[in-house]
Length: 150
Image (cartoon, rainbow, N blue to C red; front, side):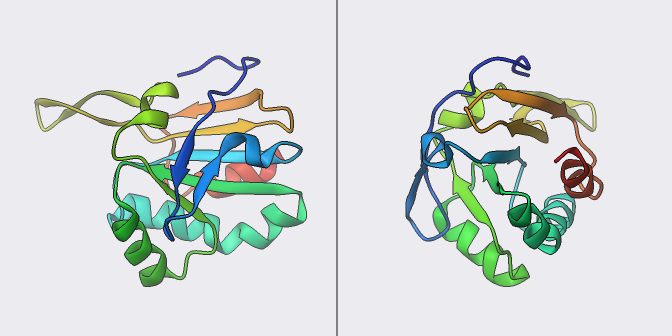
């Protein structure tokens, strides 16, 4: 996990509509950047729906929510449509941001070691500096936790 107080790594990734987004596009706003393992899985769906439900409150507070996984643009589009998600999902199949933010790690699944995304959420301030970082977050509780931080 990256250190609090450090400059957040820059990235440029496509969203669920194929439009490119860079961290620098959000200068002057707080960014909730959350990394999740896979579209349309139970934990990831609970987390995404939580962020979607609270999204108006995030925008009221001047914050933007960006979800990142290694799924494709097409997968993100289906995920957005299936659950009426109201925020940006970024596709990172090349693991550009995923590795830069140190969330691609060894995981132990049923005694088998695999590499994957550790569910992690960063709060990045208006100047692009990491304000808070949470690793191995609880999917259902994370959206409310982040809203309370703002």
